[in-house]
Image 1: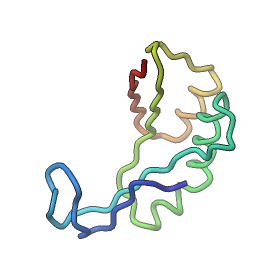
Image 2 (image 1 turned 90 degrees about the vertical axis):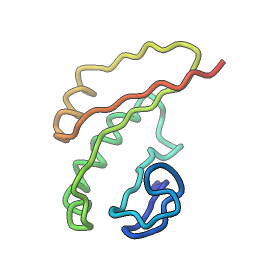
Image 3 (image 1 turned 120 degrees about the vertical axis):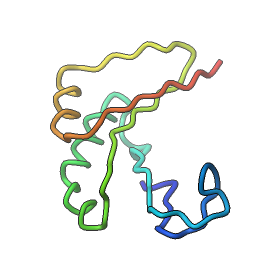
Image 4 (image 1 turned 60 degrees about the horizontal axis):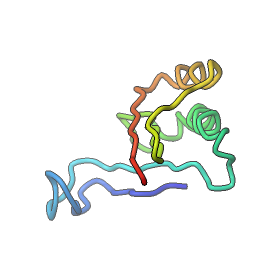
Length: 101
């Protein structure tokens, strides 16, 4: 699922380009809800690997592999397979934790 998409020169909603035309396009790809939580990272890495050329053909010049996780405890672990899959994408890994009580 694609979310938070913006086309080049679309008026920005926040940040540096709020109420101004953006000099770039951007989007976020979100793992479908039907994918089990334990399979999210592998699914996303496989999706990126399968579609990388399509993203580039569409004009992507910069991509990151973002992992967001939520909860009351901030620790996280990844399996060696997940780490290998992320590495295969060749993308920067970014992670953010959102605390929820």
